[in-house]
Structure formats: structure tokens, C-alpha cells
Image (cartoon, rainbow, N blue to C red; front, side, top):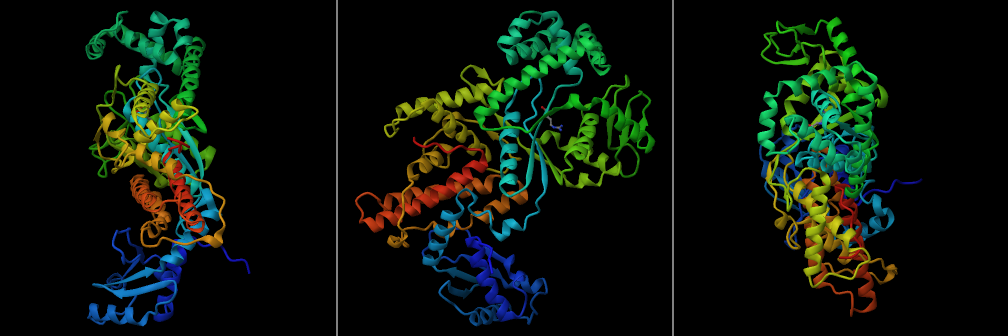
Length: 590
Ligand code: ARG
């Protein structure tokens, strides 16, 4: 019989669960999920798993005889130790299990050698997660507008979610939904006709479109203080009027308007592709608001026939979402001139994506200020009878304050990447330990990007944070630079003779930790927060760096040296896999 390879954590989990099952006469599965892996601790004899007897009693899985302590002790005594589960002892309402270190190391090494970049993925825990087609919509900048810190966050967070879902075996569709439609776009196009220049558009497209939009907002050809400029634009009826007119032409698909729009869009997408590539991010689909204006009209009709759309006194079309029908919560879908809004296009886009991709789940990644928008979107879809909207999710994130470059405010994604690279390059040239490398610019860019990512992923995504280049680029502490440095430092690819393996059990505290990798991925898959994986990788790299100091390879007897090499190669595999899921490309040398 061919047995499925079992991931190491599950191997031990199963082993303990089967003891419990035999002892209590209940199915093994009852205990698999009830066993909780204990986070790594520096304490020598710390246990690896915990079973809450209290929880089993309260769920009615075990009969409660009224004395929790005695019941826990009796159960712990009934369970027999063996060469794999070395210690079993009772705590307060819980039973602790400690696994043999030798067995642990052997399992971890075996799995990492066999599975390499799939390390941990065969875990039963992860296999139990629902698989299917996942649409992840992220980044989604607006043409001719700033690519602000929020778009950067959406890009790296969405990329993480897509990577994670993909590595867990989902069919992932990575989607960029450009802001390429709406009144603002009319304003831009009208402005381009007056102040735009085809030459400049070809030479520096993103900058020129951005400038034109600002110019058109002021009707002045001199760029003034941005805030002041915007205030003036609010009063500038004529520009507003031209923008409105152009947008109307676009909605009517008038040829010259469409041609200009198409040009802006194509040029923008091709520029973005280049910058995303630097960031290591790609998209399967570049969709956008523009794709769905016709369908948006169909959605409106459908809502009308379903009796869900009301026309207000002002002539706008709204959907009442309040439970008691008193319009205390409503969403506007149509302007009085009949043009569509952001949410109307989102409704159409969602329905269209379901038709095309038949996804099992869809995830939207934007800042938290759009929380209400997505809540309304899902509510309307459900009201229309699209039950799959239950499986749509908004992943919100907080604001980043103070992301600036030496040239000032961040306007384009490229600015951030250039700044990260330049600063990292300077730090590397000043560090004494920096190795000779073929392409220092490339290394600096990759390390700079990891610094951005780690900083961003450390806490809960909804938290706001203050951005500080100096802090994120530090070589020590929980930074992306330290992570890259450690991975590069211990990355060795030795040829190993397994008979020489010996284990430095006492100095290496990382093994029980390594085998919680699948649980960490599981947690991240459940709440879509990268912090679990970041914490794991940071702790692992600190443990690995310290082990590397205590366990020299050079100068040790051959058998010991080889064993140690293998240990580090395994840690390296795990670090590199985790980093890739976060969207970080490990560098070879630093
Ligand atoms: N373009 C929007 C913005 O910059 C984000 C789009 C989010 N996605 C969506 N389906 N509405 O704010």
C-alpha cells in the first residue's frame, strides 16, 4: 500500500491523537484539531503540544465528573510515552506533550530534503483547507493619479495573499482593476486636449498624464502648490463642464474620445508592468472600471425590474439598504444625468467576474476607508440573488503616514523603489561585511523591497503606521534586511552523506519551531494576515543566526560539519519558501 507522506507536525500530531483515541475510545480526528502546537520557547524542556481537557469537557466530548484536575491527571497517567512522544504531563486542565528531539530533527530534515519548495504543503492541516478558484483583486491604481502608499500596500498585501493561496493549491487569478473611468477621467481627457503633448506622453507617460490632470484642474499652465490648485479647481466651472462633457462622450462610446482613452490606458498599463516587475509582482488580468460601463447599465435595469432601485427627488437612482426601509442606509447607483458611479461599476465587475472565472471566492484588497463601499457592494449583490457574494471578502488595511523620498512626496511607485534601492546601496557600501557581488544594484533593490514588505506586514493589516526609512533599513532587529542577510549567510548547498549526521540538540532550539511552519501558514490562510508568517520567519532567522554562531561548520570534524551544513540548508529552505510567499526574493549574497 502506498502511504501518503505526512508532514512532520502532522506526524507527531497523529501519533499523539492515536494515543488519545486508543485510550478514550474516540476517533483520532477528534483530537487532531484539539491539539494545539505550543509556540517555541527558549526553555530546555518546553512541551510541543497541549490538549485542553477543559475544552473537551465543555464541548461534551468527554464526560465531566466534576473534578477537572483529577480527571486531567488520570488521563495523563493513562497515556504511555514512547520513543516519539517522550514526555506526557498534566498541567492545569491541560495535558502537555513533548516530542523526541532526535525524531524531530530527523523528520524535519527528511521532509525539507524531499519537499524543497513544497515544504510543509503536504501537511494534513493545510490539505484540509478549502481549495478552488480564488480571484484576488489588488493594487488597482488610478490612471493619471498618484500611486500613493495605499496602492503600494494593496500591491504587496494582495501579492502575498495570491502567493499564499497559490502555494496552498488554489487556482489564483491575480487581477488589477484600474481606475480608468469616471468623471475624473473626463477631466483628464478634456485637459489633455488643451494642454497635453503627444511627445511628452511617449517620453514619460505617467508623469505627463499626472501633470495634465493637475494642469487641467487649474486651467493654468504653471504648476502651483498642489493643495491650493485643487481648491481653485473646485470653483472652476468651465473645466468641470468640459470634463463632464468628455465623460458623457466616453459613456456614449464616441470614437475620438475612445481613441484617446485607449491610448492613455495602454501606455499606463505598459509602464506599470515594468514597475511591478521590479517589485516581483505580476497580474493575470488588467481589468478596470471602464470594462464594465455597459454592464453597469444592465445591472441598473436588472435592479429596476427587481424593484430594488428607487429614484429620488433629485433624480438619482438609489438602493435602500436599511433593514426597515427608511433610507437610513442607502447606496447611490445612478447620477441624475444617468451616468454610473464607482459602486455601479463594481457591481457589474463582480457579476462579470463570476461569469467568466466562476470563482469560489473573491478577495478585494484596499485601505479601510473603503470598508463601507464593499459592505454595500456585497449587500446589493446578495439582494439581487447572487448568493456567491457570501464568498466575497474585503481585506482592509490601515494608513501609512509620512512615506516620502528625498525628492519629496511619493507620486509614483517607481519613486519608492528608487529610494529603497538608493538607500540600501549606500548602506551596503558602508557596511564592512558586504560581499563582492555581481550586481549590487539588483541586490540592493531586492533587499530594499524586503525591508518595505517586512515593515508593512509586521502588525495587523488594519493598523496605521508611521513610515521611517532609517528604521526599516536597519541591519539588525526584526527587519527585512536582517532576514535577507541571515538567509544569504546560511545558504549553502552541500552534498550530504546522511550517515554522518549528528545533531547538536542542546544548542539548536529551532526544530520544534520549524515544524510549526504549516500551522503558521494555516493561520495566515484563515485570517489572511501576513504577520504570522513574518513573526515565524523573524524568530527562525534569529534562532538560525544564533545557532550559526554556536555551531561552526569550518574547522569541525567532517561528520559534524556535514550534519551542521544539512541543518542550515534545511532552515534556509524554509526561510526562502516563507520569504517567497511574502513576496520577497531571497538574494544570494549580501
Ligand atoms: N482604484 C481604486 C482606488 O484607487 C481602488 C479600486 C478597488 N477595487 C474595487 N473593486 N473597487 O481607490
